[in-house]
Length: 324
Image (cartoon, rainbow, N blue to C red; front, side):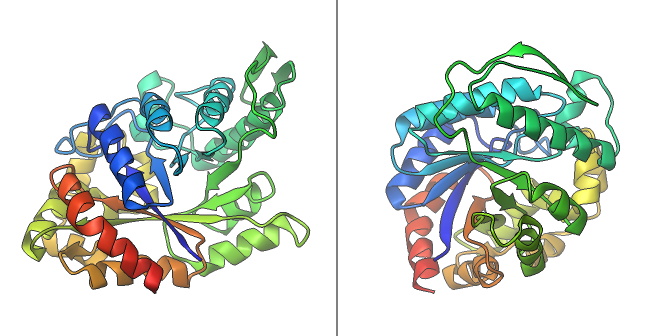
C-alpha cells in the first residue's frame, strides 16, 4: 500500500508555521513528513527560507508517529558531509528512529552562497558519491580520517551515533544517476512518476539487496475555486515547469523570475492540479502509486491556504487516496 506524506515547504512558510503544520498533518493522519532544505526561495513571492534542520529538530520533538526526512539535503558544498553526518545522527536520536536522510546533488540557488562556484553535473555527482561514503563511515561511530578527490576529514567521530546508522535516500533523475547511486543508498527519491526509474533502481541494486522504497513528491494547489488555485500556483510555483536542467543551475530568485516570465497561468494549471475537486487532485497523486511508488509526499502550494487545506481538504483527500 502506498504511504502518503506532507511536505514542509521551507520556501513558502516561516519556521513556527512549519512546526504547526507538521503537528496538524500528523493529527490528520499523514504517514510521513518531508522538509525541503533551501537557503533561498525559488521566487521572491514565496518569501521564506528558514534553516530546515532547526525546523526538523522542533518537529521531531512536537510529533511522535510520523516519519521525517529531508527532501533533499545537498552534502557537498553548503554543508560538509561530516557535518551532515552529525546532523542526521542527531535527528535520528531525537525522532526515536523516525528519520531518513534524503540526499541530492543540489541546486545552484542554494549552494552558490558559499562563493565557491557551481560545478558541472558529473563533478557534483562524484562529490555526492564521496559524501555518501563519508556519511556511512561516520554513522558507525568510529573515528575516521578521509583523503578523497573532493573532501578531507581529519580524525572525526560522530559521538552520538544511532545503532544501525541512518537510512539514506538519494534523488535521481535518469538512468545514469540510478546506476550510480542505487548500490550506495537505501531508498530512491525522484519527482517524476516513471516506473522505469524504479525498475532500473531495483536492477542496479541486485536481486539480493534489501527492498527499497521509492519516494515521490507532487505539488497540488487545493483552493475554494479553481481560479484561486490557478492564480496561487502561478504566483508561487511557475518555476516548477522549467525542468531539472534549468532548476538546478539558476542561481537566484531573480533568475527564476526571468526564466518563468512568460509562463502563463494555464501552463501552470496543465502540470499542477488546482482547485476544490478532491477527486481530480487524488487522480493526479495516484499516478505515482500506479507507477509503483511506495511513498508520495504532497506539496500544498503556497502558505496562504495551507491552514485551510489542512482543516478542510487534507483529511478527505487522504481518504480518497487510501480508498483507491
